[in-house]
Image (cartoon, rainbow, N blue to C red):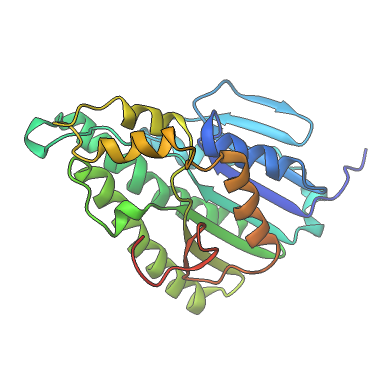
Length: 257
């Protein structure tokens, strides 16, 4: 039986909860879309959504995950967008570097920086023969540009991701202009990560009061609104190769938030 063609293929990491789940829901609801989640949740295929179980801390599991994407070859001819959103991330360890755990420091860099680089490599190999535009969207943070005491690993990984995005974009310009890469800072989003920040002691994270006040004053962004804004920018053609975007300003970011 001939499968209906698809126009948008989204591959999104960290879809179990928070922004990743909101991105998957928004993408899934767009006509002609198929969403592939890469997360630690149980694998499934249901309608136009699939989850592939993978722990991004296990870098050897990333390449094989792409081989399990269930897209019939007859569905691919109508693709206009194939998109990888590197959303999954970890904040721990939080605290002065002298108090941090060795394994947590290594895991932070693996999940926040090493895994997205490996995902980007395999995404390129997976999608280079597909029609349409191919996008890598890396979820970054204001902590990539402004130092936060207690977030040394997280800030370093996000800063590295910003630079990797710029370098990959230059490569795409030369190798294959059908590909593009950009970084998107979603702002302060009401997720489980934010909840863990608010549970910190001030000796762990000196700016915890800032985040407590943001929650109390209702200034945290809803994941659903952030997801809709990001995907709308992509679908409207408002993202550019090599750009870094702050969703609070909905435009290229010229200075740190």
